[in-house]
Image (tube, rainbow, N blue to C red):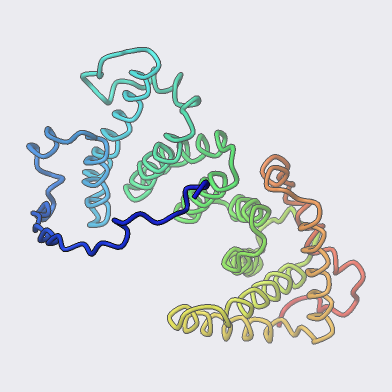
Length: 321
């Protein structure tokens, strides 16, 4: 046939060739904690990966001092690999003395190295946090936040910063500000709202009450956070697995109890929900990921956005019972 679509005789011949038997192979056997073996490290093509495995193991087992050393070695190797690529440098003999080179080069790491480098550096910060070296940990967190060009990196850095602030028992206004920044990146994450509620509550219960920069009353802020958290958790409830659903149910019961303490009426709850839905719709229409990352609002502007419903409501109690 002209198109070459015809059948050849060999297409109809039966293939009687015996199939070759499958040959078993010897899978590599990895003994426990092989990544701590100096011989294995020397043989490894990617030593930074081995140090990362070792550091993760030490961190998991609570040995933060050893984990810190391994993470620092890993970070040094990552920087050295990049330096060799761009300038042909040989490996530095002492990985812990490359701070000046690191300072000039890490801001320009190629994208494929950035997530790995950030993961290792954040791990170093968390080691410092667990060793109660808070200043070093915070310095790293703020540097990572400053260099975050993507929303996922900014969120990770803010989460790290909040963990440092809450562990160190920083001023509550600072913790609130960090949580508000996280909510601007993801206003649909229920745990942020619930944590924010507890900060407002703690701030309100201090004697004398802590100084707040907000013009909104405690009941307004508390009610908004609780209603928002309940709304988001109820939406999650029907989609989650059993383990998540069980924990979710307990938190929903807690939220109901806190709402009862505030003496919030159904009318006010409906007002808050309507305001939230309207605000969420505006965010979906106006914001792209780039806009969110570049234009983080101040805490005052964020409160105007989410607590503004109270300007038209005269039904809130002056204080919680």
